[in-house]
Each structure stands twice: as structure tokens, then as C-alpha cells.
Amino acid sequence: MLFSEVIGQEAVKQRLISTVSDNRISHAQLFLGPEGSGNLAMAIAYAQFISCTTRLETDSCGSCPSCLKYQKLAHPDLHFIYPINSTKEVPKPRSAKFIEKWRGIVTKNAYLSLGQWYMEIGIENKQGLINAEDCNDIIKRLSLKSFESEYKVMIIWRPERMFHAAAPKLLKILEEPPAKTLFLLVGENQEQILKTIVSRTQIVKLKRIEEEDLSAALTRNNGILETEARHLAIQSAGNYTEALRLSESNETRDFNSEQFQVWMRHCFKSDWIQATEWIDHVAKLGRERQKNFLQYCIGMIRQSMLLNYRIRELVNVEGNDLSFVKNFAPFVHAGNCVQFAELLNTAHLNIERNANPKILFLDLSMKIAELLKQKSHTHERQE
Ligand SMILES: [Zn+2]
Image 1 (tube, rainbow, N blue to C red):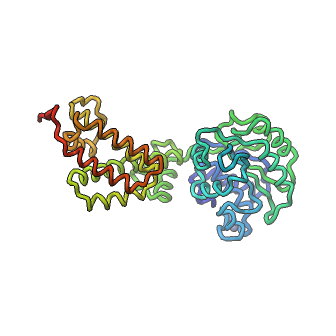
Image 2 (cartoon, helix red, strand yellow; image 1 turned 45 degrees about the horizontal axis):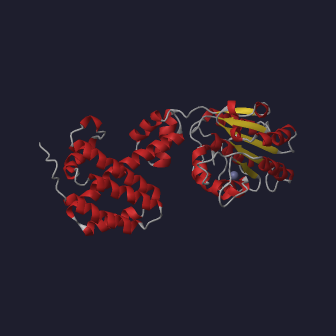
Image 3 (cartoon, rainbow, N blue to C red; image 1 turned 180 degrees about the vertical axis):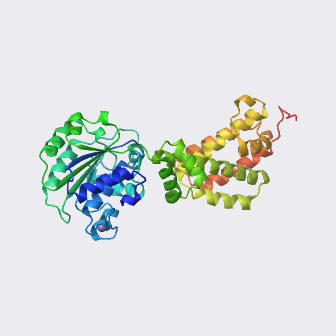
């Protein structure tokens, strides 16, 4: 991670750079900033800068052997501790056992949230903890001589999640640190970090990212158009993680809306050539995306039904969706709406149970085509 890859936060970068040029690098620092401010990215960029062998005035070189290892987060003198919990594969959790996952997700996005990390390691229903064994491990790892760099660096992500029994070990080592060792703690809520730990660190405070910096980054890193990027920067209040979350959900909504219309048209016309092509496309999406799409379809069937029966105040559909639903609604009626919803619900369940998506969507398309042919007997729509 180069300083230039950290979004905005220029004043903090300058201050950190000057600690290196003035040779006053403090051995324990707490990078404190709200979610999406880039506190982890900044800590990594700082460590890389310190370790870079041909550093430039204001950034790492990006190409020396140290930087190349840092880019993969695989430098032998760079260590990480983060909240974890037991999983089926890892019944006795240690940070080291999750290091490949950590490197994978952080190299892609150093602005990840705790929730995204829990999801990555499959503990989203539990709380992650920094455990005592990991703190023992810190002591062991740091007692070794550094391999390649002048400094050994230990980055502790989210000390808020430190198990109480683990704290004394960390405190001791913060008090009597081995020579040429840096502790970079990366947290979001100072009140949730043990006071005794905070008091032994120098705080590096990050604010929310400036709107302009954030919107430029969304365009540069994520290919988001300028007007949309500006909108997301405002909506997320300077939180890059949240801006990405929002952009993804907007994208998903547009995708679902478009695909639902295409799919229903193929079914309505019983156009199996086009439908098969469409199914091939949908089958390539991940299961989570397919489930999300089916959930959207269930919602649209319900909205069509409401619109059809003129319960307009309940209808929560806008724009493009509304004009489609107006045309589509007459085909959803008392004679088929229950079956419609059941079909989609079952499909949703079967996707979760690892059904083959191609077979599932083909079968579903044919059944929906049949349902769309059924005329309403109980309710005639009047214009
Ligand atoms: Zn370098």
C-alpha cells in the first residue's frame, strides 16, 4: 500500500512522513478513525514506507524487494493480529491460521469493515475476538530477530475486540518493547479500547474522508461516473466502505429490475432460445446474487398483485419498474399469484441447497410461462 493509494488524509500522511525523516518513530501508535476513513490502509502504508529500501521523499518506491513483499502483505517482518473465532475448519483459532484470507481480502480492499471480515472467514453469526493465544504469539514472533528490515511491525486491527485475558500480555510488551519493534494498533472507537492500552500509545487521528477526495477515489478506483460518485460521497458522509456498499446496492437494484423484465418477456412469449441464453447468463452469477434476484422477483410479484387490485397506497415501485409493473400486473391475479410466489420461494430455497442453477431456472421459466397464460377468472381489470 502506497501513501498515494490511501484516499485523502493528506495532513496525516505528512505528519507520518515527517516522523520518518526526523527519525522519531514512536514504537506504539494507535491509528484511530471512523469506519471507511482508511485507518488500516494508512497503517500499512506507513509500515511499508518505513521498510522501503529506496524510499522517495513522500512515498514508498513501490518496486524495491521490500515494497513488492508489502504489496502482497507477505513481508517476513510484517505481522498481523485481528479478531477471529472458531470455524469448522479452524476449531482452535489463531490469526496466523487465517493469514491467507486476510492477505486476500485486504490486498483487494484495505477499507474493509469488521462485518466484511467476519463474512470472509465464515463467522458472521459470532463475534470475533483477539485472543490470549494470539497475544502469546505476538511475544514469540517479536522475540525473533527481524529478517530483512530494520523494524519488525505488528499491526493489531481492531483492539476493541481484545479479550480481557489477552490484554495484560499486550500491555507488558507495550511497556517493554523489544528493540526496533513497531506496534500499530488500528481502531475505530476509543471508548471501547482498554484505557491502559490507549495510554501506552501515541494516537494518530483520522477524520472522515473529504467529499472531494472520496468522490475522486470512487471514480478512479471503482469506475463510478462523476455525478454518481459525488452523490455517493455525500450520502456516505466520507465513509469509503459505506460508499462502496451503497453503490453495490444501487447496482444490484438496477440489475434485478432489468433482468426481471427481460426474463418475464421471454417467459410470456415462450421464447426458449432467448430464455436459454438468459439462463446461461444468470447461471454464472453467484448463488448469493441469484437468491437476491429471486427475492426481488418475489417482491415484484407482490407489488403487481397490489397494483392489480388497486391497493395503490401499498405499492412501493418507482420509475422504470412502475411502467413495467403496470403492464405486467394484469397477468398476476388471484388464480395464479399464490403459485407464483410459491414457485419463486421454492427456487430461492433450492438455490441455497446448491441446486443446479441452469436446470432450476429453466424449469422455473417453463412453469412461469404456464402461469402467465392463465387468465384471471375472478377479477377483470378495468381501465
Ligand atoms: Zn520500496
